[in-house]
Image (cartoon, rainbow, N blue to C red; front, top):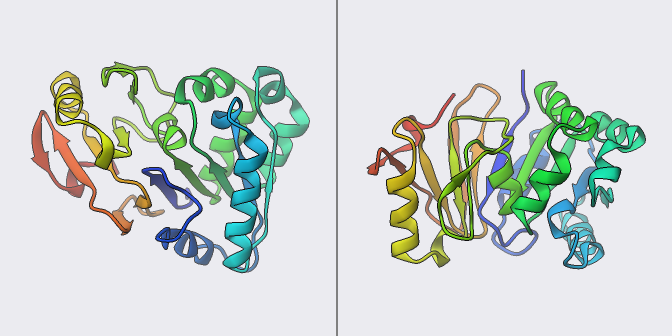
Length: 222
């Protein structure tokens, strides 16, 4: 049975992200959070890891970074083994295109999927959330591209509270008819339980569209 999946709209590791406590509680006993700052490879990834470490320390948990920053890192079997052994994996925000190009068709991605399917908690924020779904929204214009997600069909618009109405409308119109589109604000998470049920936690409101029309969480894939 897969573990809990968290699709976060951005603004991770800060006040309001109450869902991180929920994710920790989903695990029996202490669990170290393995943070992959891959999407932030060109944006001081060490700062992202430091922020995550401080945040989870405040929740009574340990976190550490794993520098999977390029294809060479993602093809490294030692990195893949660390991901496979993790019980809580967190993909941070940054560039979804870079994150996808680094992880696609690599041992590290295969290890991530296997760990989640075996019960590990898997969280992705902003770019991380986008890559964990398929199809993936191209943030440059709101159209669609191929994702490598663990859930499909589903498309995520992170930072939805900051997207323009025109850009969001374009995404809704271009979405395949059977693909739900979810808009997730910052410091808000769309959570999928092991049984396939979906809930929302955090400071914002998640919106769902299907075939361009408003829908609810029941439209999301199990």
